[in-house]
Image 1 (cartoon, rainbow, N blue to C red):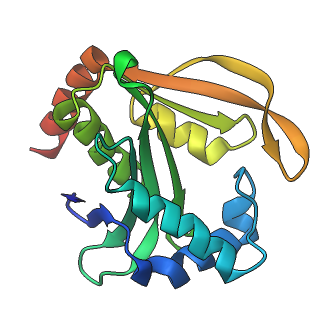
Image 2 (cartoon, rainbow, N blue to C red):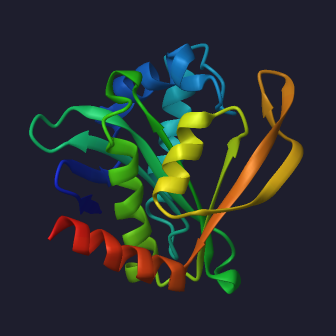
Length: 189
């Protein structure tokens, strides 16, 4: 499966992505607010990647974890994910992790916009959620820029390197997305 934006190709993962994913997960700066932690070996990353690739064949598919790469160079720049909750609730949660060399270039915003489009227009979701540690100012800015609403916070909800951290919870509803998507289209036309 592939999604595209003006600058990005967002595609299903393959085993060829192993080294890039391991590098991304091994960087302290990209792991600062991440619950995964830095993998001790590439075998740990291989195991995680194998689970992600295996989940691509589930029917119905619940887990959409994609590689994000630049269209022009095919350079891997990160991961983005949409994980469906139980089908009854017609909702999902997103997360993303961009390589530090590509921070502050709008790639996360661009990729998430496309993932929202996919979630609402292809999967016909009602609601998409996201969460982030309250100190993660960059993610807060991205989530708010794409039109998500901060619904509240959770106390000591996210374990990061053995310490429980507070988080903000965000969401966007289908009808909110439709309004925001029309605004984005007007800005780009």
